[in-house]
Length: 194
Image (cartoon, rainbow, N blue to C red):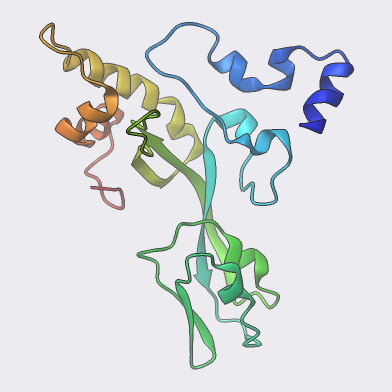
């Protein structure tokens, strides 16, 4: 919050302070929310969220480098999905959250970042029955984010009924995410959530 105060005192407008205000200026069917790291320079910031409106992910890979068996990757992984086998790290990729912490912690280069991208979620709710949004893309190119609000708007319009009003999270539960992929022109859903 100190950064916000300093920027405000230097004469910057709200839009200069928080790009999210600019992204959501007009009434719309969707709202783009940015990671709060834009205010304090998060050490886990993998991409510049001020420009994209999502958060970054990084896929780790075990390289052929010689390791030191230091265990720093094990300590860095909050989900405890890394183990040592024959002195080498093994990453359970089915449960990896793509945070990149293991690659950042590795002093020898045994674990590196194979690729970076963005994770996109939609349909979260707040209030009494709060829940995270559904994962639309586990990892994709940053440019994909710009087509998702249009796909969501299209799905809302195509499923609209005068009889009832679906909250988007309920609509996704009913239709699944296949209509979003179809509108985005994603062939199948290989590597994406079901």
